Amino acid sequence: MAFLKSDAPPDVLETLRQLEAQANACWRGLRIRYYPNNVAIWALLTGGIRAVEREQAARTSNTPHFGPMMINISRALPIAVKWAMRYGQPAETPLNRRWSGELSAAVDEALSVAREYSHFEVCFQAFHKDVHTADVLEPALIRFTTPGAERDRQVSAWQKGLRPREGRLAGRPPEPLPQSPPVQAAFETVLRSCRATGSLGFECGEHPYLLVARNYWR
Image 1: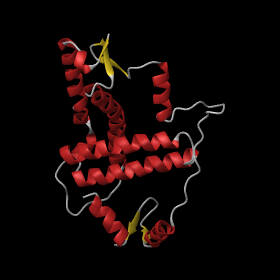
Image 2: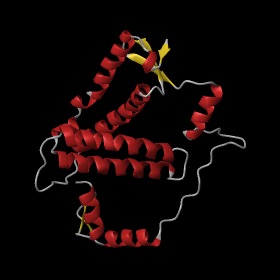
Image 3: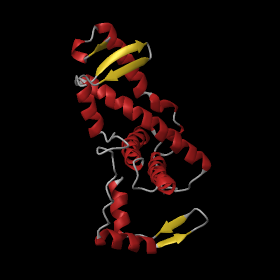
Image 4: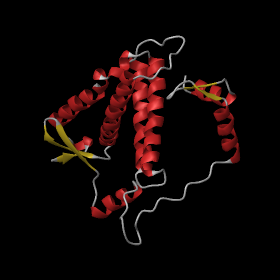
């Protein structure tokens, strides 16, 4: 039976408490936490960019897949970075920005776990605020539901971007907005300062745009 938190019996609340605690500890098995936290953060940000570039290469950016992918990575990446900051090893100086197969695998693992955890986190927060009901189907299986009639669920799906594939209500991605001239000029300036250091490596000289970004992520 599905319950709002305010109506749930004690045994259901205890089951949910245990499962939420188990979910909150999902970072413990991640390999990314054995790296210096500044290396882990840099690698995760690089992995996020790689995910975007892979999707662009596979299907371009103006597709029904690209928007949800960006939403998912925008949720998963801050979670993984938070784990790296809290549970990673002490920062190393100077920062060694060296990509490797092992680091790549650790990044993929962390982002995959964070992506799954992000959905669970949203559902539990909604349950705590009496927005979702929770139905304990098995000791480790919960079904979260938004209360309401079929029309309410249709409106919820529409707001999430889930549209019909055909007909007058079919979802159509909007045309991308062009980058503003200042952004284009900044990109060209930074790109000109880059130097190749191998088949997959490059270095950038110090530049005000890079310094702003670097200080933002510290």
